[in-house]
Length: 606
Ligand code: PLP
Image (cartoon, rainbow, N blue to C red; front, side, top):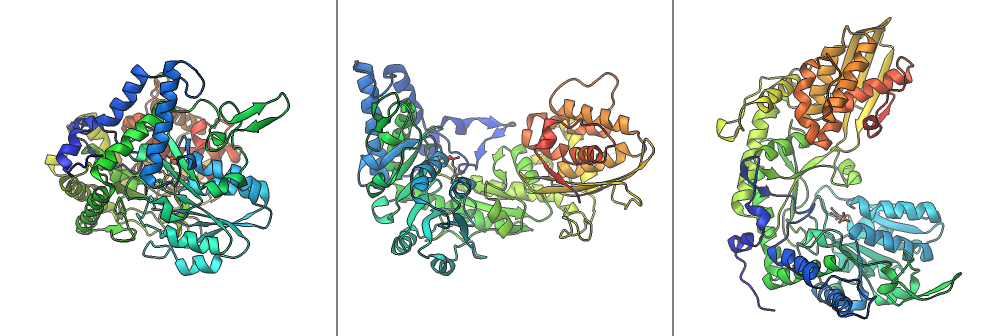
């Protein structure tokens, strides 16, 4: 394959989406760890396949079917070569990394894991390399144990070695952390696992896009990754199954393609990899993935890795300049890919960080990143995460830092966090200090209008929240939590007959959930329970984009109207209200008017 020089500007021209604008600004795409963008070469390969060769692979004797089969099997060969698999028959196509782990948990796990056995995971795993093992443990009675993560974001290798024992049947570990960018020494881990008699599955979802991966030397029994994080299409992923493991596995899904002979009451199976690919395969996905592999190979994975590492290092350098930034994970180097940087900004909730950045056209991720055990390990409910790839530039990294300064100016006066009950779930959070907000630099402000004035109302409630004073004699007290971001709220209500005589709303969360709680406290106090229910229904209708009932005036709640297009933030806005509602329902004050939204949150006694 002809090598191509690594020229970021030339690379960017291959990615049509990078020239679009977002909210009137040039798109700065820093969310490739969630999914990467696709170059023309991949888009063209998929389109060409659909226009010229679409047919069901393996099934026909006509020319198109043969061509589709050849393209599909050729993609398997190219992907195998790219990751250094010893044989293309080790490459099983699946939908994504998640399906790859589930395949192994069923096909290998069900046949080899018994009650009392152990599966060793790590605290830094993505949920997709945890939940399939939880389910296996439920089916078999096996036990899950987790290798701890050190303060610096590296795996505790001494603990890992100490935890290995003859009981461990499988080690399931990520190659590169999607939150910390830590590169785990998978070849060493594989050697140690094998010496202890265990098998090892490596989650390469964040490794294959960013590092030269050589499975020949990595020694993993199972290695999974997703096409959509490495310039390929969604809906195609890979699990590489070492050929020595083939005979230890049962089929995963049953159906067409994976069989040799079928009787009405029994069947025999095709050889791997086809044994594990039941049903019509995603041929266009495989063709697109092969084109992505060719694109990366032409640049050279060493060059791709060096570029990402350099951007990661620069990001950490400039973010350290922003007051209040806390960075997670090691600095880029031999044990960090630099492909992601996770951070928190003191006093600014990660959701607010992401939303301010979005206003400036910068796409990052905020939340728990499907790594809740790791969030708990670092005692944060969520982080913001910027991730880099071959098309990102130094300027984009610097712009990220500049926008963070704006987010700090807008929100940091709050130094968010509300005082919670002394022994309740909020106890560990410090009380707020309220100082007037400094509005963003006009250069970075978007146009005035409803959006601007709504934002000012939200900000005002966030910085000067109502409902902070204790209520004596509250009959109803309920706690709610949004598991997506860890926001929590406690609502205490004192009733005087039909009327809401006192409300206290204590919470810890983003500007939207805090402001919504403040509005709840100010709007509901003095109203009847029936009026409160009407307001709640109106809020839900507004957030679904439905017309409001008749003469209903939502007051300051109207400032939340722009959230209807942001489903994640809708949950933030509803949290205090559904917590109030559920508390009142449980207390028998209102009938079950419970909407689907509230079921998405977790509630309980404070
Ligand atoms: N593993 C890691 C480390 C990831 O970052 C991700 C996705 O973010 C996954 C697994 C799951 O990938 P997918 O959703 O494509 O199955």
